Image (tube, rainbow, N blue to C red; front, side, top):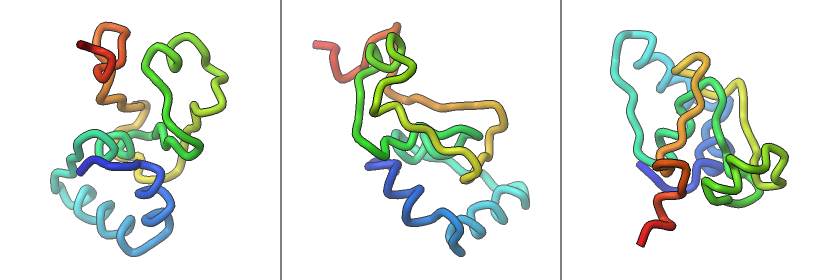
Length: 96
């Protein structure tokens, strides 16, 4: 589900929950998520540990203080970083 991906990283990293998700995936099961739930599935996860930022901010400032990334968490999609709220270079929440 969606929500706050930093919570998933904090709550599940190194736990039986993370192990269970990996076992399902490694056994051929499907793991899916929306919004924050999707953001944590890639090899690199935008974790929002220090707060959020807009799509424009993330695209124009690779060193923005709120652009925090996690490696070594689930990593179910090698070489992938998911962002589910980006559309045509603009943050979907900015569309009116």
